Structures are given as structure tokens and as C-alpha cells.
Length: 224
Image 1 (cartoon, one colour):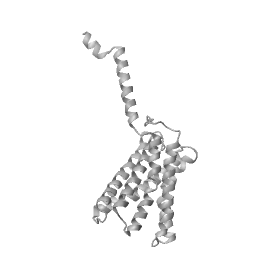
Image 2 (image 1 turned 180 degrees about the horizontal axis):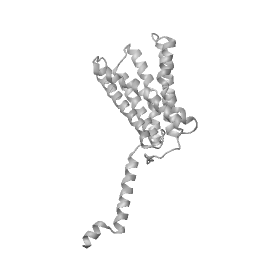
Image 3 (image 1 turned 120 degrees about the vertical axis):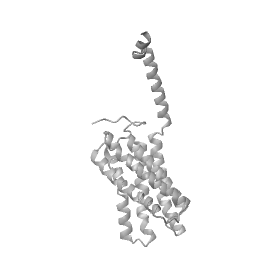
């Protein structure tokens, strides 16, 4: 009978020990996670790599190159770090379903990175599946615009930070507009879009790097 009581009502020292173990284990996990500053730094460092990809393609006179695929891979890894930073800041709101936007974006970027790796291995591939995977590049940019609008409307981030993701999301229509106005047949038509990309993604990384909002670990979400 005493054994049953012990199992159903453990002594206070056992509860305290279990609580301490969970706290220590949780702190060890948080220490293993990259900090928001590290995520933002990765985003800033990777920001110019889309421009490097453009220059690599022009130098090789080819749309896809192995070197260009590597540059794209680095660029998107930095982009994914920035998305994780936005998740930690709960930039889209405090409800659980608000985080779903970021998970979808990360899924799009993961698929696009599969294409980047494929380009590194076989840049001249012409299969249908190759081009299907390539579609996740523009899809990622379009969905970034959706996230930017949501963040701007929600207003969780304050001041200029509120509109940074929207600026990033406007890159695709801006780049297409520049190339249309300047003429897609000219190489310099892509330079304004490349410059916009460096600025926007570096600004996003800087915003996460310097933000005083949120915590270093993913905060608890509010059920509403």
C-alpha cells in the first residue's frame, strides 16, 4: 500500500529533482541553439550571394552553373536563418497558427535548396521535375510578400522593423519591373534587382541581429 502511495503521490524532493533535471536539460538544449544574433549574422553574410550567382552565370554565359548553384544554396541557407529569427520574434503574431506561415516558407526554401543542390551536381539538366523544383524559387519570393503583408498588418514589430519583411517580399515584383523597363536582353537590366536583393536581405538580417524583441529561444505561443 505504501508503494502505491509513493507512486501516486511522489515525495516533494522527487518532484523538485525532476523539475531541476528538466530545467538543466532545457537550458542545455537552448545553449545548443544558435542565438538570434548568429541567425541575423548568417542572413547578412548570405545576402550578396544571389548577386554572386548572377555574376557567375554571366561570366559563364549560362543560366545555370555549378558555382551559381552553390551561391544560391548559401543565399537560401541565410534566408532560412532569417525566417527562424522571425519565428523567434513571433513577428506574425502570438497565435499558434501565425507560426504556420514561417513553416510553409521554410518548406518552400527547403525544396528550392534541393534544386540548388541539383544545379551544383548537374547544371544542364532539362527534366520536367528539375523545372518543377525550380518553381519553388519564385514561390518562396511570392510567399515572402504574403508574410511581409501579415507582419506589417499585425504590427508586432515596431518602427521601421515592421516593414522590413515587406521590403524583402517586394523584391520579385521590383526585379521584374527593373528588367522590363531596362530590357531583359541587356545584362545591366538585372543589376538594380541584384542591388535591391543585397540591401533587402541584409536589412532583414540586421533587423534580427539588432532586435531587442523576443527571446533567444523560441517563446511559448499564446492560444487564442
